[in-house]
Amino acid sequence: MAPFLLAFTALLLLPIGGRDQMLMGRLAGRLGRGGWLLTAGWLAAIVSAAAMAWAGDRIAALLAGPAQAMLVAFALLLAAGELAWPNREAAPVEPTRSFFAIFLVLVARQVFDGGRFLVFAFAAAFADPLCAGTGGALGGGLALTAGWLAGSEALDKLPLRAVRLCFAAITLVAGVAVALNARGIIS
Image (tube, rainbow, N blue to C red; front, side, top):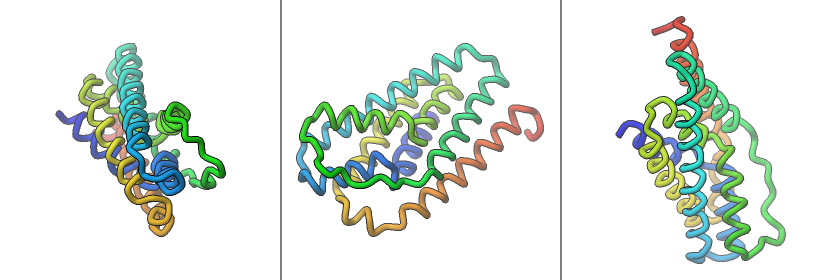
């Protein structure tokens, strides 16, 4: 149950102001809040969370105790770096109305975002990819739904950069603590 709750919380909160949520808000503002757009978002959230949970489980199975903890630390540090990276993407000028194209773009953005790195880390740390993937998919889908509901105007008015930097700092501290614990420096 712990990997489910951790992944759910991480993917509900960490995508705030992320590339996928901002894209969803901009597309909803430009194309309208159609159910097809939300369906593409939920499918992308499910696919990306499942892929990262599966990858975390497969790679962790190859590693022993301390190496497994260092893998989790690296995933946390990668997530912190992605969260701190500025999101300076412009709104799509001529967005497609293709369900498959939007789905692919969302999956590509999600697979390499901070929240999915954490799904990877939780699946590796707890050896429970099903719970980590399910929690990640649910949290990620709800985060995209929030972007879909808010639209681009509401998202552009919020201090999302500051929120992402706070999440980056928290994730960085967690990554350093896990790394120090894995090395036996702290316990």
